[in-house]
Image (spheres, helix red, strand yellow):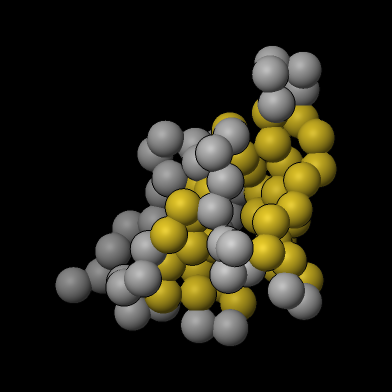
Length: 79
């Protein structure tokens, strides 16, 4: 069956790129998952929102230490 992809916040849509969905889980962490529902992997350990993929990087907003949102990036392969 179809899986619902949770959003971090209102107006924060998941981002689909190259066979993966990049999204924020119910724990507000950044994840990627295959479009077939397999290969789920956590990409970031901080409060994340608004993922966007460009090349081999996932850019996202991260709330770091309660100081507000900062732009961060992580490789698309999570390494």
